[in-house]
Amino acid sequence: MRYPTFNSNPLTFELFEEGSFSGLDGVFGLGHPEFLNSRLKITLAVLFAWVPLLILSALQGMAVGESRPESFLLDASFQVRFLIALPIILLVPGRVSAKLGAIVEHFLNAKLVKESERERFLSNVDSVMKLRRSRLADWLILAVVYVTSALLFRFVVPNLPPSWHTVAAEGHPRLSLAGWWFVGISEPFYEFVFYRFLYRIAIWWVFLWKTSRLDLRIDAAHPDGAGGLGFLGLTLCTFKEVAFAISATFAGGLAHIVLLTHTRVTSYKYEILAVVIITTGIFACPLLFFHRLLAKAKSFGMLKYGTLWQAQQRQFDEKWMQNPGEYPDMLAVADFSEATDLSQILERVQQIKLIPFGRKQIQPLIIAALLPFLVVMTLQFPVEDILKQILKMGLKF
Image (tube, rainbow, N blue to C red; front, top):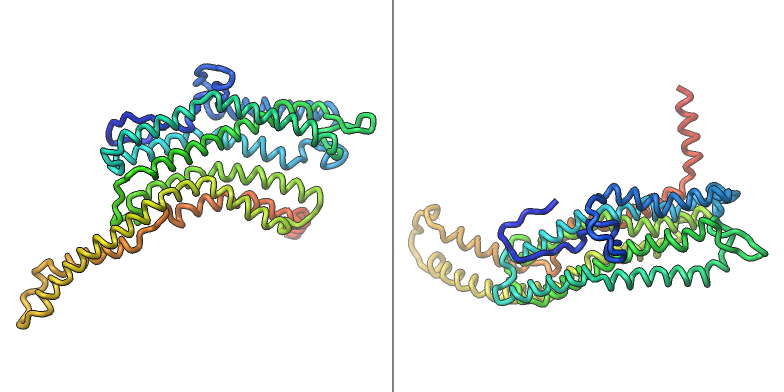
């Protein structure tokens, strides 16, 4: 879905536009397989990264093994990453791309970009789109994920406790069949999709930073309370699903630890807080680049509108407060309403926000980042005992 525009701008901003299987066209030269819609992408991803692990672990009796660590299906961390987080990251790019494109176009449609800065703005768009289409970036990300897998195999696997990833061989842990697929295929695939999404978020940071360096037309008295930049806060809600997916990845790992060690979730409250803050910051922090422009607009606006208000107030006092005699029909003159209107404008300037988003805009993002951990909190409650008691209560009727 393309969001409507109000004029024709020589502008193309499709930061998350895919049209291919999780961006792998840039790596393997797949061309333009547009037939791969979001549902098919998710289905193929599960068939590629999750189903083989289920089959391979079942062949070695570790789909549901003798213990939780040795059971593939009981690994909460892996199930959350590949059955929840990965599908979300594959699903949202098209919608995110359309919304960000509309927001970028709004800079021109709302005349926020002065004519003297128009070419620089369009050049910034063009430069970040070149970064977006960089095949070198794809190759570097792919190299990073496989280097990570190699380091995992070299240094982590020999020290792993018994799990579905490994089997004992001559007294030393060796990768199981599922472990080989995990290290060589599933984990690199997940990391590639995840890091490539983060790379595009980094490009979004670059674009907003470059835009904040332009001489934009900021109106300190704009009704949105953010100098006309309040529309940037719409991006926060756009990213809430991705924030949920990122937090779910960590929450799944925490759930796995809690189930294995029987520790309390509250023991990790600082770690949870750090994940929520960092996840929220990934999407909210680039909007802080506009703090300088808004602070400058507020200072200049207070001086400009303050001077205007004082001049109007002196004229008002001379006309209504210093001249004796009977007052004319006060309801028939506009002096009072005009004085009130200018006072309201000055008050609006004084209350301008120095960041282009408000509490209501960032709340859904914070809630989305926190929600997976709230689900993990339920592990502290004896769910089985509660269900048994509910069943007993039901049977008494």
